[in-house]
Image (cartoon, rainbow, N blue to C red; front, side, top):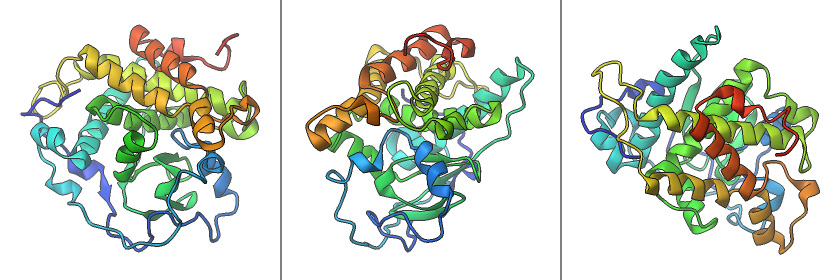
Length: 297
């Protein structure tokens, strides 16, 4: 979905750490301890064990500055630059979720958002681009390396459309909502398998991303009273479904190993990820995103 040009972005909601010392492709390590479990359980759609043959060589490279979030000021900037699109999506999500959850008498403490290149320190330990976008519950922060969005196209065959990218951001914020509601820990209690708690957590975050998508075109910028995003098109919806499919466990396993082993799933199949995103979008009802009590994922 494209942003309305006149929307005023709030860049203070995004911290820009690009140009840091950690290089793209370096390994997670160094004093992480139990944080590794938290980090891996909360990944967007990538099981690092499956991606060893798909990620870079592991050699450190200096981070590259690609502009700063504070220079993102309008919806027109969000349509032209990826870092500004991340910022605009964050603004929209932070406007949507407090009002939506208030209907259920649930407070929404705003998460932090960090844009980085190569690697960064997190409350869950040291992280790199190789693990993809993720939410760390220990510091309630969503982390994004903009380079991932090109990987999503080049390595995983996703559409590169705006809603494919916005879906990624919305999915990570879905993990924050799960953290608020007390559901995120299910991924750690039952971390692997086709019916596991980890898969149910990820599919619910997809559903929450779809729920936001349903209302995103009417959610207004509090400064201008203008909706953040323009009306949804079928192409937009197809872009999001393409991204959901691209990061299904079955598709990633097939690409990495040539076979599909559901007992190793942590995020759900391509079809499941599309199904739950679309359920959230179609119903707009958080109660319909209960992946924990459904008889069929």
